[in-house]
Image (cartoon, rainbow, N blue to C red):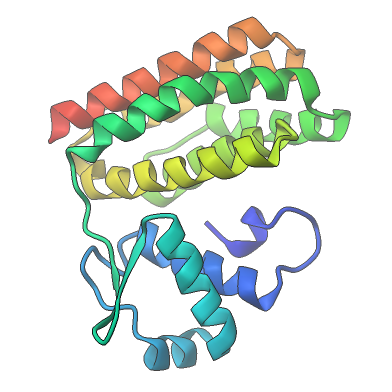
Length: 218
């Protein structure tokens, strides 16, 4: 997942946004594993970002439950509490369908063309973990954006990130992962066609499949 993919427009992300996206993806992909210190000096040097954007990014990640800040101790990547997975899934089950419905209703023609390109990717997945997860993330985040509701997009983005980190932890234990992500093809078809009822239904079923797969892998 790259910052370019996740920025909201074609413009390059700001330094603060780039710092956030870079640190977020290091955490989600477990390159900064649960419990790891988020050290300002080595990370700003390694990533080529300034101290102020770095600190803004850390505060933002704290608000999204990915970083914990302890006075006089420092900042650390939050631990993954597997018991939280059912709670995360409960929120996503209620909102993912609503987001798919709103995307089907509100996506522009340009956005529907973008979704059609993602549908082609979802239909032709191989077995590479990074590709599978990247396509899944792009589909979800694009649908959230197509709702044209920044509050819904922000809320679902936060919960999707928490679920994505759990997915990285258990990827090797999950069966038929490419088939799971391939389910997006039908979802995208419904959104592109403006079939709000079907998009809603498919999105909820997709979240249910993921929740059950993770529960079985734990």
